[in-house]
Length: 272
Image (cartoon, rainbow, N blue to C red; front, side, top):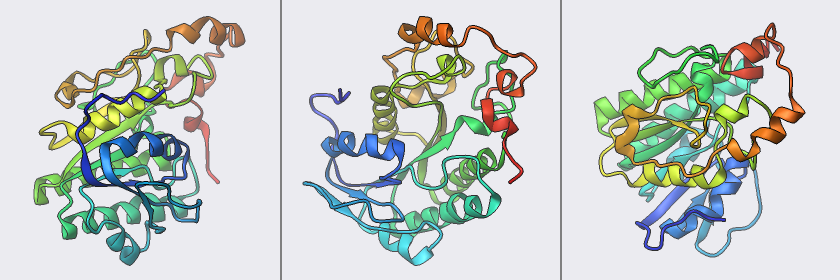
């Protein structure tokens, strides 16, 4: 089910990067209603364009390709780049060099706003018995989280220096349903993902705002109070799944770092 309003704000052309990724594929049909043309991008071919779509293939580490990609777009939903813990080289290419290329292209084309898929792994080394806000210091749980912290700092720089607005979304776990006890706290439904992205695109003034991407779960580690101005109101919850999840995982190994820290399994991954 799509979470769209009856009379949405429309853009002339939106760009969705990472369109063939897990969340990109979910957002693709949802974002069409908010724009006349949805430009879709990935580094490799992912099929033909549909009605109201155009496809531009681009590798984020290729400056010229990214510059062409951002031509004539009104806003960017940036889901592209490496989305898991990996060796440093691909993360450097996609999430560091690629982010600089994206923001430089936005500056040159005067794109006013970017919605950036950051990650909860920016603060993955906080414990699960803590509640974190966007004002707390970052504590990345690996190269991936470190690269997303860089992306947030880059977004702040381009807001302060060039006036490009960004909403950095520290996305939790966006799946059809929570898979384990950790996800009872981190889960975000696909409908809430849409609500979050659309709020980030359409809020009147955002500057550089950081907001955790999470549904209205009973258990939570993240405080979004400081991002109330974005207007994100989650409507779903992991609670209907709790009994089934706890039945599948009745015992937690408290000696396992993945059960202690918010980043889960990411805190134990690597070196490669």
